[in-house]
Length: 573
Image (cartoon, rainbow, N blue to C red; front, side, top):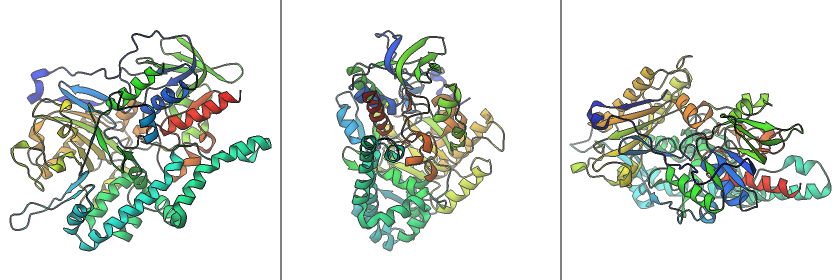
């Protein structure tokens, strides 16, 4: 089980607490018949069913097994007074049209924008009494060039062109995000009328190609190449290359030298927040604030949302079509269609009588252990010291530790590949309470450590609490080198290894994307070629979560695309 430790210094309120951030639908009785049932209350499904199925005239209910709504986008009070984004911790890839359609600001969503957004301190001796160097990046290109110039003037001059190049490639992908993949079966079979209708699905990929124009070869290279091949073409300095490389491996069991890591970088820069391209922000109250705003919008359209409703099986009729679900308490709920926000593995191995052998081949490998930390003092970094426990601009950033060189990342990856947690893990630290005072008591802070690389099994065996504590100790030892006094400030920690992410949040293998974002699991092959159009082999059963195109983190698009598919099928029945 996950290790949650409330230290001796924090035992003034010794009972662990959990906040019900996703309210039970106490004012609505669960009906026995709906038009559409959604399994799982993650933000992907909430976006989809609220704005589109319900608007399309299908009476819809959402069934969430946990006490808290939002899937991985939840806020929980793990320790008294400290509210954490327990799994997902930053917002960016929420599609703008969904943000607008659901009027999420009206429904309470507030986002704190971060600028600067990246801080990489060095572990080195300062020169002539100066602090160690660091690299800080934000929206100000001239400031970025000054920062990069500390390591390489050539890199500083190249950086603006690199950013413009990435933005052009990322912008060209946008038409693909908001539409289902090309309907190959529809184009190649059936009546002429159906083929012509299916041909419309070519439009997004044509738009993408036209936007790319002469950059098509560059696009092909970045989605297929190792990120280090791309970065080495542009830059010489290790701190800059390593900082940028983290976005090529974040959440992925891969190294910067592996093919396909370039696409993961592109995936993480193609987001948008408050009309700012590539921006990531903190949600007030934690990531559960996104889920609550979407749930509020969904309810305003008439959607019924229930927590603590654990689906045990999807019902399939004698005609081979889905006809509803059975809860684990035996309650049967019938519907015309069922949409699963669970991973394909959970959907087809645990919930349906028809298991697809191909589902076993989906890669769910995860390198992530998430550590949520309650502290009574703000970390003070040697590379950017701040007096009197006052936050500096760098405290609002994603703080990259153990990222001085790509070699450090490569070594950490290889250790996990051999079944051992990294001895010098890649650490991405965020301190959202610097901008959002609602998360922690006065003078205290919540710290998120998104760590890599850790295997699902340690040299072939299960994780133990001792293993969790030992890895957290290793991570804290490294933080201490950058910010002395950090370990003494810790009053509680919540350690989630890959098996814990799987058990608590339903993330098969602990994979935050519902499946690897590797080239063999993208677009027409996400999650499998036979499932890429959101339909399953069981008529009336659809996939709508992060396992579907366009993949992990792109909030709303899988649900939006799945809804388009469902509504089209209903129209032709």
